[in-house]
Length: 293
Image (cartoon, rainbow, N blue to C red):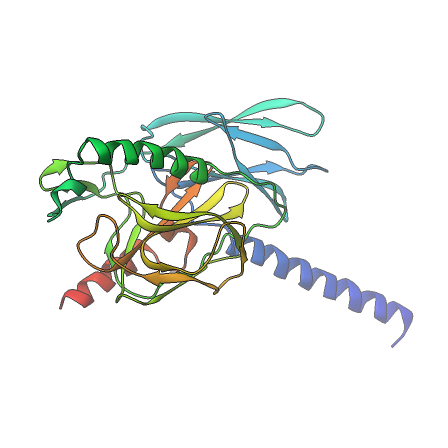
């Protein structure tokens, strides 16, 4: 092959590689849903260095893409419909605001009967324990570690039907409680729970409501939580890779049967885990319907 032929060959290969890279970038972003409990994605444009972005005072994930930097923002379940802004600061200290809109979303209602009355109306000693644990849980979910590469396409940690979708307005023994901030995946007791992406264990413990729980930090404000485990097989500070076993499914804490409660937090906002997977809510509901037949 002549020199000019090699040049065109490598130019063509470079174009193919760039196209493949841009497609990979598009594939590993979560699905956007500008609603409470959803994710908003906003382009920041090209820049020689990663811009700094905050939302409601919390740092926001910023990842590189073919056309420049992109902000990936978690929206709290309690957010109201209306206009919001991101605060953006570039490497030179220049600041700007980036507006976006949040639409309303009506989540369904779920009524659950809990036999252990203390798990609905805790006593004084329970409340003291819950208050201590709340500080620890919030600290873990608000974790933000600087990391260049973050895997945003998550693998389901357990295979099974979704018994309780994200965002349900819940009533325990006919008493209103906070909306459901994760996915409940039904699985037999002892089923292995796998890490959905590389991360670091930032805390583990036995909590009053959540039972045996593991928190994984995946970088830049992406934290996942695994509750009601029968057994924990990892420890704080340990690094895990996709598919590594975290423990097994159980029914510890406030439960009506064995399952995994899987939560995802992004910039300290509890968001819908299905936005980060290839399984959408319709598929999850179909799984529930099939399991009930």
